Amino acid sequence: MAITLYDLAGADPARRFSPYCWRIRLALAHKGLDVDARPWRFTDKQAIAFSGQGLVPVIVDGERVVHDSWTIARYLEATYPGRPSLFGDAVAPIRFLTSWTDRVLQPAIGRLIIADLPAVIDEADRAYFRDSREKRFGMTLEAVSADREQRLPAFRQSLEPLRAVLADGPWLGGSAANYADYAVFGAFQWARCASPFRLLDGDDPILAWHKRVRGLFGGLADTVPAFD
Amino acid sequence: MAITLYDLAGADPARRFSPYCWRIRLALAHKGLDVDARPWRFTDKQAIAFSGQGLVPVIVDGERVVHDSWTIARYLEATYPGRPSLFGDAVAPIRFLTSWTDRVLQPAIGRLIIADLPAVIDEADRAYFRDSREKRFGMTLEAVSADREQRLPAFRQSLEPLRAVLADGPWLGGSAANYADYAVFGAFQWARCASPFRLLDGDDPILAWHKRVRGLFGGLADTVPAFD
Image 1 (cartoon, rainbow over the protein chains, first blue to last red):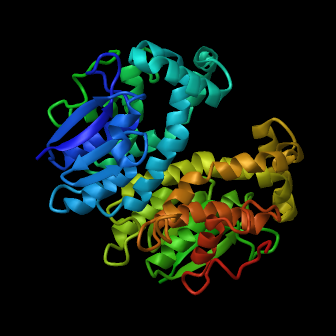
Image 2 (cartoon, one colour):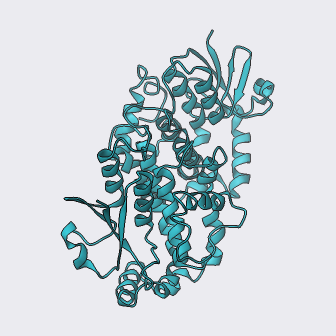
Image 3 (cartoon, helix red, strand yellow):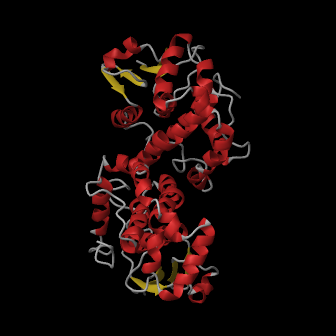
């Protein structure tokens, strides 16, 4: 039986743009598990109330309900140990990379693209999204992203630790892609699916890596509604 | 025959404070290799000219000369594969953590403590150190560190990805300490050996972890000239 994933969608139900949900889409594919990825909107709190909280990703695997992307990834690794490992013996340093993505990379990307989000999210979500985010930032979404061209060089510079890894090999996880790749991939896929703003130079090795990840699992993350 | 390590020292030759040299001291101990850690000063360029460059750490292992801490760590792993592994199969995500330490953590610590360095470095190095660093920063060392109390909360906040790992277990490398720990350890040991400024709250789990690393290898990094 397929695992159900509640997956953030835009006005176009095929446009999936949550960075955390992308991690889990790829983790499920890595494990070779079938998925029913159901479109979910920010304001569909009732649809996932059974998980005891209001954020996606949430998975339902038979009788088991798991939320929070890191908890889901650890659950999949523990529950399906005979399938390709998501972490190898590197779970601790991958936890660091994932937490850096949560706390540094994604907030930085968010400030660059957030003014573009209202145009892609579902109409029913727009007021909720704008109100909650503008309250968090203390300014309009447009004001948050207004100086993004000026902030772009420092943002690109902040990615040097990723380039250091990619100078040594094709994947952040080592000799094969693993959860290290999927965690960081989700951040850039979020931007790709939700904003026309170009985060990376055309010759950036991070862009080449992102395209490699898009090529995995039959192009699972490639042929989707996106701005390229 | 012991491996020779050229190791940055202060006015007190027992005060070793290079973050990069500490990584290698611990990596050598992890591999169970004997070391002759020779005190070296910033201006002793002639003493390591045989390495083809002017920075420590440099190691001499029989006929082989290796410099650059990451290159040395990879060399030790490749040359002594039968001894405890420095990376497990996690070399790529440990590369990320190490590069983040180089590019984000150490520069942040440097700005907080650099005004204290002249008091501990060798008299022969003081003019070189001040001139080269003040040129790099475009201001006096005292000006760089002047607002350190104000910058401390944001610095401590930036360490959250380390705390995320330490919430799951005692080591950054996983079930045992490895190069992930030694890379980050060096940064905090640099501060501990060179400055009285307190980077961490007394109840910070990073401080407890730092003390655990100091306890390894018979207290190799514990009972040294330091500000605590």
